[in-house]
Amino acid sequence: LGEVENRISFFSEQGKKKTVEKVIELFQAFNNEIIALQNKAYKFCRFTKVYYWPLYSDQNGIIAEYQDGCWICAIKKDVVTEAQIQEFLQVCKQQKYKVRRMIMITFKQMELNVKLMALEKKIWLWGLNDLNLLFDLYGKEQIFG
Image (cartoon, rainbow, N blue to C red; front, side, top):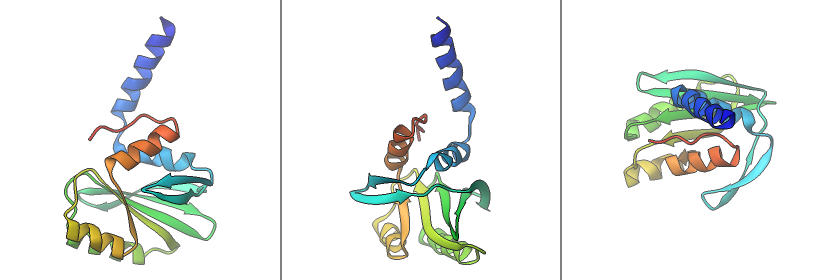
């Protein structure tokens, strides 16, 4: 009975966490693993510092620092537009650290032209399925869009 109560309590606590907090915990769990995502192998760096970074009114961001660079991640729950891709690129260019990877987590389907623009600009797109796969691999609770 105690184990069931512990699991219910844990699930309840996880449900109260904001998406950005869960993604920060995920990034903190990375430890230089090589993982296949979207049919490619990627190295998930061990970061020295991961923190919340407010991007714009409707988007949360995360900066994950390591050695001589950083990853910048935007979390967008609504539809992403070309203007938002451009705005994200501008913000990334203004960073004091060398941006090694730009990631945009999207919960809604993107229009093809927006998706192609992001890929052309070397922005790594994670949908809800990609994110939940990583949560599974790192033993974290999934997000339900």
